[in-house]
Image (cartoon, rainbow, N blue to C red):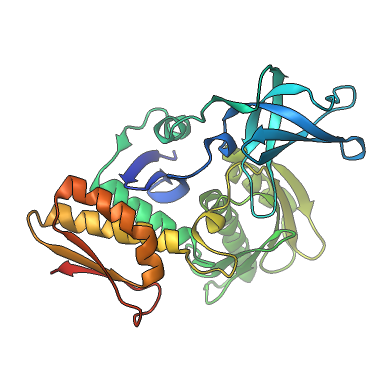
Length: 346
């Protein structure tokens, strides 16, 4: 029977929640100071209907402060322009896409946040109600591992072979490669690899926060569609409601449609070129500095990084000084590689 555990790592500027499935990271949820609470999953808003697109069965709502959200509506439930509605965020905004909301009812007054989204500890508890919440150093280490795995493209399959996951604008392409997976019966080897790939793919897509259309290019030929679909239904069951499975195609592909809920981790951590943002690097530096300060009480510590990262990290390091005293220093070095930083005794 599968076991899920939950972890919460909190540091200046950022909190990371992790769910593990049988010891492997299954979900990584990141909340950062500066995130707009109105656009996080589960937030309830009063919003004004700004425009209506009847042909698309979609309304654009003004959530206040320059924020807009999208409300899909059913025939006969078309809102009127200027109408104030109470809505709940059911899909966070993505790069180039607005947040999607569901209708709760009518409201009054200006656009505003009516109730904040659930905090991370509550969200984590919803994934594993019987599990105790783990915090501290163990949670930080698990979150670091989860973050590293979430950013990988190629993943090793149990028993040999590889699974590649590559999001595009239209869909997420998943490739199953047997590699040097061994066995005398080629059909049995291929079947085992595909079944392992389906289970691993489901966990990794949850970890990466990927939704929408997924196309798996299965290994080999002569598949057993009923067996593969049964495995996919079981593997993707935690993503329900909203999962839809296509049949195994003549070219050996399996199509899966997954609900979009949270923002993909790649958009949280990376820029459009695929590099870690200055904010992501600054958070890593601050976590490292806090960990070193805890492990070496009383020591004067210096963190060294490139100027762009230092500019983001500086106010957070200042807040750490309030906890550890004036023994933490941040220095700039424009000659070092951008993603490299050091923390050492000064």
